[in-house]
Image (cartoon, rainbow, N blue to C red; front, side):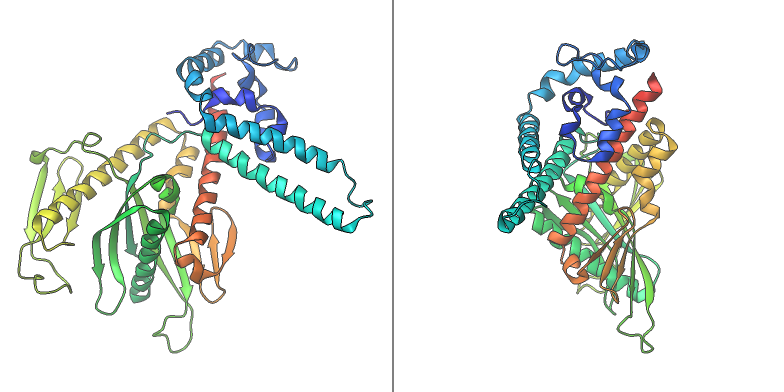
Length: 400
């Protein structure tokens, strides 16, 4: 699996193209990786160790990358445009920095100058992150169709109420992003809230934006039914499953045990009167799924098969990752599903994302599932891309 488009690195090694210091230091400590095989494009630093550059493993690996992807990737207009824009901004910023703001007599001019410098730095950071996104390719399992499952955890009725709030947040976010959204499962309770729900989402960047939402979401607040005013802590588990095609996961009918039963719970006249609910057991993997969302048995069978295929696909991907990544890298990619990833504290109007080690406010706005959530998921994606960047560098270092 390729984690990084290394054929660009030599064009970007010039430190002026990287405003973020963490990327500068990473590139600086691995010069030999970004110069070999590009001597026709740029001058190789004299400080590069000839022993490292002469390493047959490194040379073979980089030559392979060039032959596979160089022509295709260097012709991408978005990358060329980003590089040009970054260079122009750096030149402009250098010119602005030549002014001595503290000695500037014209206060109005000095204030405007500060605003311009700040604006240029913000644009540089934004463009640098866009460039990083272009250089880090989608992983093999990146897709536009996903299954988002939400399940109430610890906390009883309060957990179920918050499960419904998160369900509505993600459904609203799908509409905000212009994605297609379909409710595949919705198990609500008579007292309010839902035990479990499943959304089928489809759209551009759907998986890349939401994959980091998988994990344990913790809520801290005083329930409406709490008379003493004590703060309760409840949890909700979110799972993000890439939705494969029939070609990705082949399921034979002979490997399935399908049972029909009458739907249970609140839901209308058809509940407990027709055998519309489906229970599907995949014998080779032991995976069992159920669906009673629709009053049509055929529709429930289709949804159950989609859920089954998604779960099996996810298991296959996790097995593949465990074979191709080190234990540390694997934890970065999947252990968040079993960890507390975010806390919603209503009393303090605070959302804490534990991966980013950041606090955000306006909890009501966040749960609306619009720009506030969008900002956080984008930041999580940038964090993941930087991790992939470092993993790539480290993996090549091990080859030397």
